[in-house]
Each structure stands twice: as structure tokens, then as C-alpha cells.
Image (cartoon, rainbow, N blue to C red; front, side):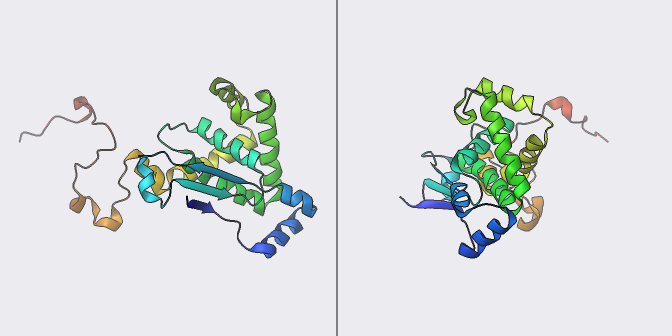
Length: 204
């Protein structure tokens, strides 16, 4: 089964050296901090048509696997969508991992935030019951860690074709000839508004 590589650790040794220079880490500590997230798309999932394989993989540059998995679950608590597979929430982890690789302070913020979530749920946020996860997230609302992850959710989760496909949104219109060519009544991805939402017809 071929894996869909959502993101790769680019730059090889030069990239690793740059990261080490930004943070006082030993080689062993640096390698210990990297991880990978793996998953598969459900058979028949709308976004499966966009991928060459049901398997997906995300290589992390700065965060370990457990931290990445917790951030993925955190994003799902913040913006829960049953129709979105973990592959979409992995895009959030990809962006946060890139921030952590570029800024040691962000890396520390994310790792400390994840550790706090684990403590709040009795040891493992990613494996905790939904009610416990939600309570832990609500308890840190407004904190820098919460704001950082939530801020990335908006673009990572909603500005990509996988999410659009899952929701049935056809995408923007300006590069496709506008709504004149596409039709004015193609808004099938949202429910019809109630009759009282429109003004009465003009009868002349």
C-alpha cells in the first residue's frame, strides 16, 4: 500500500543543523523529538478520490509522535467534524510542526501545552474520553497554547480541497467563469433557507 506523504522533512542534514543551532539540543535529544503520524482513509470517503492510496503519512520535523497525535486530537475537539478524517486534521499538525521547527519558543509552548492536557485528563489526552478532553480544552481557553492551535485550525482545516470535498463545497467561482456560468442555484452544500428569509416578490 502506497503512503500519501502529507509532508516531508526537507533539507536533509542542512535542515537538521539549522534546527539544532536555533535550540540548544544534543543530537540524541533532537532525534528523539521527531516523529511520524500514520493513518488510512475509510473506504468510500469523499476525499479518497483525491488520493492515490488510502494510506497517509506525516513526517514531523520538531515534534514527537505522541505530541503530534495529541495536537491532532486537540484540533478535533476545537473543530469537531465527523465527516473529516484524521488526514485533514494532520494538516493542522503539519503547520504547527513547521512553526515549532522554526521557533524553539513555539516548540516549547506546544510541548508544554500537550503535557498540560495529558495531566488534565489523567495521563493521555489523546486516549481520554470525549467529555474529559472537552473539559481539559475549556480549562485552557484563552491561554497562549490554546490560541496558537486554534489560530492554525482556521486555515489548516478549512482552506484545503480535502475539506471542501468532504463538505460538498465546490470551491471558489472566480477562476471558473463566475456563478453566471456555474449557475445561481448550485448551492447544494448548504440547506435551503426558510421562506421568510427572503423578501416578498415585487409584483410591479
